[in-house]
Amino acid sequence: MSLCGCDVGTGAVKLAVMAEESHDLLFCCRETLRKKAPETAVNRCFDAAARAGFPLDGFSYIAATGDVTAVTARTGTFFAMTCHARGARHFSPEAMSVLDIGALHMRAMVLDPRGKILSYKMTSQCASGMGRFLENVGQYLGLGFEEMQALSLASEDPSPLSAVCAVLAETDIINQVSRGVPMADIVRGIHDAMAQRAVKLLSTAGLIPPLAVTGGLAADQGFIHALSQALSASGLGLSLKTHETSPFAGAIGAALWGGTRLGSLKKQVGSR
Image (cartoon, rainbow, N blue to C red; front, side, top):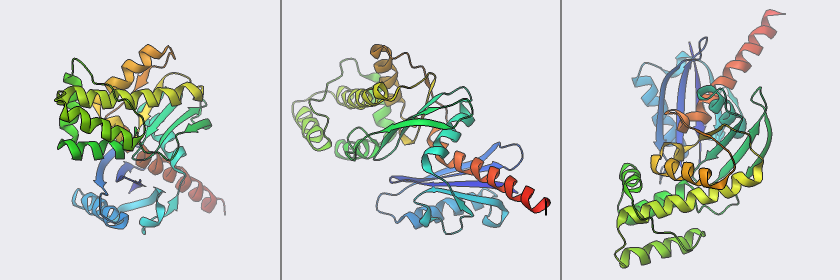
C-alpha cells in the first residue's frame, strides 16, 4: 500500500505517491487547469497514477489540500501551508524558512526545528509576480515555459519593468516588444521584477536561512537564478534551496501528513 497526496491549486493539480513505510517518492504528476474544471484535472492525475501502477484502491490514505472538494476520493484534508512546509522539509531537511510561489499568491513561512510554522507573510490578491502573470505573459510573447527559462538565462542586458501591477506590467512588455527589445532581455526583466517582489516579501518576514522554494515557479530556473542574484544583493543572508520535486511540495507534504494521521488511527484501533 502507498500514500497519496493531491494538491489542487489555482493553476494546476499536483499528485504525489509515496511509500507508506519508507516515505520514498514513487510517482508524481502535474495537470494544469487552464480552462479545465479542477475535478477533471484531478481525475486525469489519478488516471496517470493508475497507468503507472498506482490504482486508486492501492492507496492506504488519500490526502487532499488546496481546493479539497475537487478530490472526491479523499480520505482526509490538510491545510496548504502546513503541507508545503512539510514537503519542503522532506527534500530539504535543513530548511528553516519556505517561500511558496503559486499561480496567484506568494507565501513566506518561518519554521521551527520540528517543521512547525512559527509565522508567515503573504502577498495581496494582486497576481503580478506570480505564476498566472508569467503564464499570461508567455502566451502573449508566444513562448513556452522552457523557452522562457532558456531566454532569461541567456540575457546579457535585462530590460527592467517600470511597473509592478500586472496590468501595467503587461502594457510595459507590449511597449518593449514594439521597440524591438531582445526577447531574452524582456524575459529576464520580467524575472528580475518578480524576484524583487519576492525579496520585498522576504525582507518583512524575518526569515531564517536556509530558505527552500516550493510551488510551480520553483521549477523555473530563469526565475530561480534571478531570485538568487536578488537575494545576494539584498544582504538578507538567505541561502536558497531548490529540488526537482519542489513544485510537488504541497502534494508530498499532504501525503506525509496523511501517513501521520493513518499511523495515529492505527494506534487508536490497536489500543482498544
